[in-house]
Amino acid sequence: MSIDTEYTIYSVENTKLHGYLAWNQNSKEKRPGILVFPEWWGMNEYIQNRTEQIAELGFVAMGVDMYGEGKTTETPDQAGSLMSALINDKKIIKDRVQAAYNVLKGHSLSNPERIGAIGYCFGGALVLNMARLGMDLKGSREFSWIT
Image (cartoon, one colour):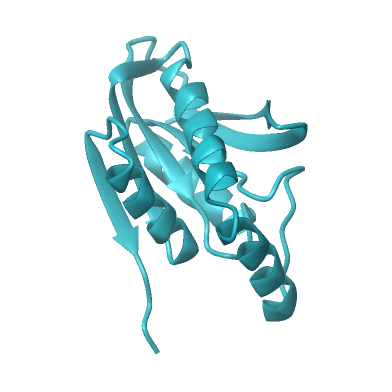
């Protein structure tokens, strides 16, 4: 199976966000779309790999950049700082989640009536918020780890 990937850049309040799209180019049919929300590390290689794995299952998948400019980190202190700044601004969370949803919904291979979301840890909380906000998700899955 041949998976195509590309970055898509979209903006929310002067912040450029770098979504990571993946899909199977062998089919031209519309298919369900899945948003992939990262842990507090940002949309790193792990999330990009997960996005590609979901595309291999027949979806159009989009890894979501919540911090902007494709920012990632490997240190807990910086990850905590980035995440805290974001979660303290409910409007920006809503706007960035909605913007990612709109990008995926508008993709030429995505069925706009069949959009779902998964999230890992911090991303799982974002997916739960999407449901609370009444966003039209056809499915969701949240993953979190308790130590």
